[in-house]
Each structure stands twice: as structure tokens, then as C-alpha cells.
Length: 221
Image 1 (spheres, rainbow, N blue to C red):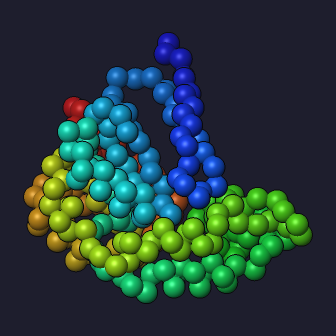
Image 2: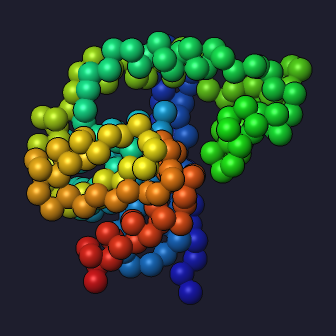
């Protein structure tokens, strides 16, 4: 039996930041390559999986370091841009939150209920008067400033590993973007998650898992 081992790595924060960044890596054993999951808003031979902003980060990592990326999974993420209105849209959405939320149930309902609503509510922390965002509003907006001003098709052209692109049937990623990605990177596998939105991994976890399992099985028969 292989023991589960968790390693903690602490990196100094950027100048003017809020302090060090603590990263946790858990090894559950097994003989496959490491699987690095990058959430929305690595090591040798790492399979990168990213959703939304995490997907763009994974794409750029695969383009910059093709020698360490064995495969790439992008969930509701691609190289299309620019989108100058995105920072304001995200800022307006964050400003619309009725903070503080009195309880988790109210927060879940505000975020649309279901798995996605529960996930967003789980990101809140107790504070004066109720539940508050764990994230900083201005940092969230600043994070998308660069990708709102440009596209990343040149980076996509530098990706050399097998790729799975997963989009929600009702998500933000348009079919034309996924089709163009496959045209420029032949062999790219595209999966569409029925009834899912931008948070496809939350809206239909089993279907996303199925797409990833089938893709990874092709890499490791």
C-alpha cells in the first residue's frame, strides 16, 4: 500500500503583496504522471488541468515549457481575446454581492444554487455581521487586466502536447473558438458537457471526469 504524502512549499510573495504564498501538493501514490489542477480566477512530466483563468495559465505554461508538459486539459478556457470590457464586468459583478451574507444558505441562493452555488458560498469566510469574500475585489479585477487586452493564439501555436478542450454547452466558451483551436492544433480533442455553464466541472462533475479519464487513458493505455 502506498501512503498518501502531502508536501507544503512556501514562496515569498511579490513586492507590495500580502505575504508569502503557501502551496500544498498531495501524492496519493500510483504510477501515472503528476496531475496539476489550476482553479479559475510544475514538476517534470506534469499533466496540466486548468479551468477558466487557471486554464489560460496552464496554456501559457505548456507553451513556455513544452518539455515538461505531457498533456493539457483546458476547461472553458482558450486563447481568444481581447475582451476590454471583462475587468469592468467582473468588478460590477463583485460589487453586486450583498456583503455580508447572513448565512451560507442565502449565499448559495444568490450564486444560483446547485453545486456552483455551494462552491462559491464555500469561498466565503466569517466576519463582522456575517460571511465575507475570501478574495480581494481589486486583486480579482487586476488579475484579468492583461488577458483582457490581448489574445493568446501565438502561445497556442507553441503548444506541442496532446490537448483536451472541454466547454460547457451553455458556457462562455463559443464552439467557434474550440473549432479554431483544433484547426490550428490538429488532434485536439473537444468535449462538450451537456447543460453545463462556465463552471462545467461543478455543473456536471461526472461528465467532465469522464472526458478527462477517456483522454488520459489514451495517453496511458
